[in-house]
Length: 236
Image 1 (spheres, one colour):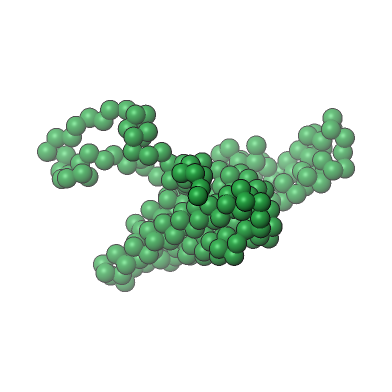
Image 2: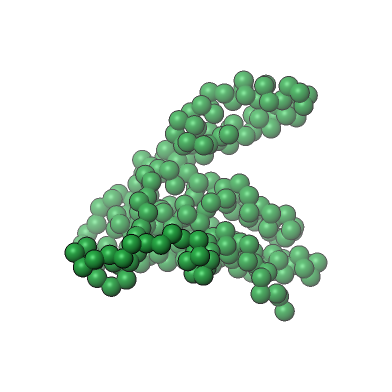
């Protein structure tokens, strides 16, 4: 039987802190008055304003590619696969996935940004919420299967690959709600980031340790500048 904290680290990464931890760390909120116009629990919940959609999509797209590329590793090396689930595009993925889901719900869940009516919009919003939930659940199941395989020193079961594929499918469903222009820009950005990493790695293999940083920066400098302009903090 697995320990109750087997997948605690990934659960915290994707789902965030529990109610007790969140309450302990959150500042006290002012009690709203009736003049606020809100009723019930909505009057006591203050949502943080989202950044533009374009700031979330590249990370979700990169995570989708990273997850899809893990299929072979998940079937052969559970320890290394679990490390990959906690690095690269998966860092901060919880907030990015939820943000894209919120945008999808507010726009009616259509990549064209249009809606055919209220019932369609409600159905689309539920669909995107399901995609977000399905992704989190699939990755947690994947991590559980990998943990069990590593502990028992065996190859992962077919359930690990099935969960991985379900996670990829959930991200595909979520990305399908992104407007075509934003998705195309995100693909270009992810490709640029991959190019920078590839060129940097190539220079590291060829150059000496003392000259690696300078040479790689010279090769990929223009692309890195573009990444920083589009997404602050990227390609550092």
